[in-house]
Image (cartoon, rainbow, N blue to C red; front, side):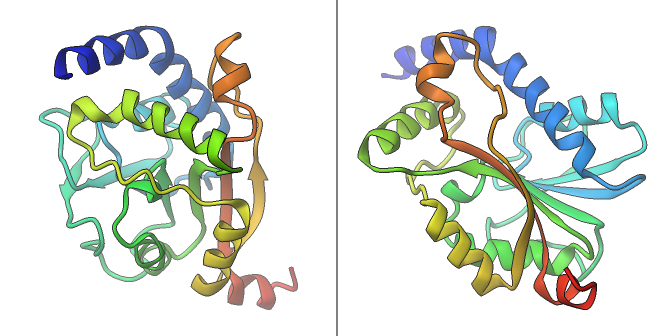
Length: 212
């Protein structure tokens, strides 16, 4: 099984990973404020952060992860997956890219991101639309993460579940992107669809004060 996972992972990295990182960086870069200090929660190998810095050198990006890789292009601190080791409001933006479906307490982690970010949260994750979409998401998750020892609880939320969680956390989306162009044809017909989103969220209290 390990040999098979490594072989599939190798093909994924050669054929898809670069396109995915480039597409995500292109989508996320315009969403971040000028000269922002950004925390990447669950940053992994940091390749996305390097791609962001290539197009937005004004940013200062730091990361945290449960599994810290031996070499990363940004400073990375280890954390327990639940509690962020930073003071309240220490960052301008906190982002999490395909992280919440790995978390033991996704809502608690979201509250932690809200605590350490004085501005917005940027979340890229998945949408579950029933059993067929869940099976596709499980396959993508396994290919991308199993060989790295990443925990795979295969916990994916519907859009209604995301919105209820955001409401309980006191945050509200100000923009949601759905067409991310992560995969080339014909893979996009199966793996793109409406399974991915990027949301920019801000505390409800700030939006109310601003009359938004």
